Length: 124
Image 1 (spheres, rainbow, N blue to C red):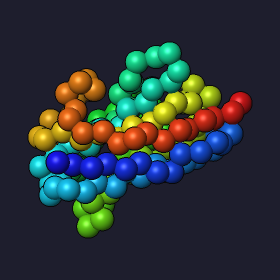
Image 2 (image 1 turned 30 degrees about the vertical axis):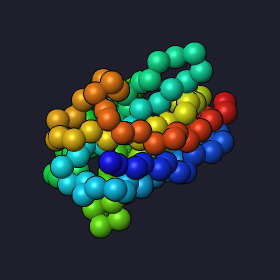
Image 3 (image 1 turned 60 degrees about the vertical axis):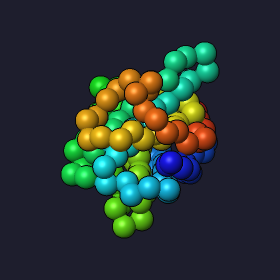
Image 4 (image 1 turned 180 degrees about the vertical axis):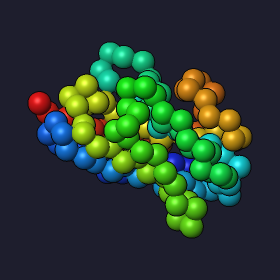
């Protein structure tokens, strides 16, 4: 079993930055992939970014490419989502997730473990 806990959300203005953290516990994470998703009110879960824990391979949604950076700290078993140049349309609840395996997938249904989510609100 894997437990995930996000932190770092908040209310910011357009153009500001935030860094989200996702602390993982319960299993050795080296064989997992971590994904970040977001859900705006009335919308489905939207893929944001994913990282392979073993080799650091990353993949991004087009909507955040060049603005967001996903990373991980193996020693702390923690993943990060650095979000720069935030826009009002980035407003959502952000979730980290995990799945066993190194393939980076965009379908939320293929992730087995989820955190509780953290709210990010970007004002214009």
